[in-house]
Length: 256
Ligand SMILES: NC(=O)c1ccc[n+]([C@@H]2O[C@H](COP(=O)([O-])OP(=O)(O)OC[C@H]3O[C@@H](n4cnc5c(N)ncnc54)[C@H](OP(=O)(O)O)[C@@H]3O)[C@@H](O)[C@H]2O)c1
Image (tube, rainbow, N blue to C red; front, side, top):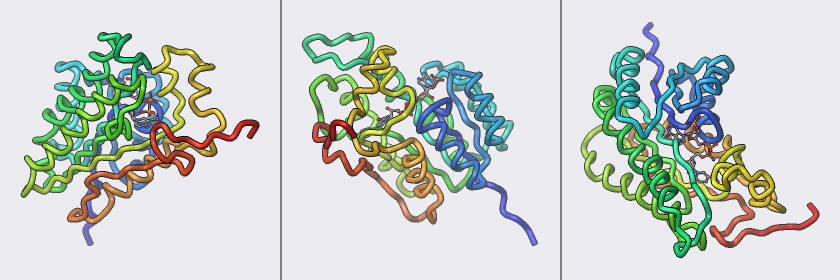
């Protein structure tokens, strides 16, 4: 009797939050996972806890992403079943009138160009596997604008268009393009990074909200999508906590 080889995945943004939970979840599901981000200490901890392979990668660097491709060739024999693009995030909450263009550039560089760079580099390995998935972790910020959100709205909407164009371009090939768009997810760093390290302001984002989504909730959805029979494509999955009806419509209970 022969045993099928484990499926292989690269997960970006795996040093914290949704990426970390997704890498851990896929490893627990029996996938061989190469988990990548910039911070090696956090990756080493993930490796020791989950058995994931890890590599320090900056998705904004051509050289770093070329090294990722070389590692995929070494580790997985150049055959990759899933690329899960999670690296990214938001920088700032300035209005358009007060826009900080360096932050806008930073959000475009990671969420859009980072995802394109990694996808372009790993597409040959996804093709070689003959059972490929490209997951793009966008946001409900891609679907509706909000005050103070324009830079992030624009970046995530750009990433959404990347998913849609890729799906058309890859039609007829054995590669699914899956977009997962969460609303409010309480992760350790997302709001802290967005708000420049202001802990009180970051905590206030979730103030009085009954059970924001967790990183594990998102990882569940991603795992469902990539483990589903390969002819079944979850094109776009929007997930929100029950307390959130829209980006700007969140039930908050004071004194919970
Ligand atoms: N939390 C939410 O409410 C929410 C909602 C919808 C969508 N999202 C999206 O979900 C994704 C993950 O968010 P999260 O909440 O898990 O935030 P997080 O904890 O801040 O995670 C962001 C991850 O991206 C990595 N990253 C950032 N810049 C990178 C770069 N240049 N190269 C490589 N890795 C980089 C970070 O690792 P290093 O710093 O170690 O590189 C980190 O692992 C993001 O794309 C975010 O926009 C979040």
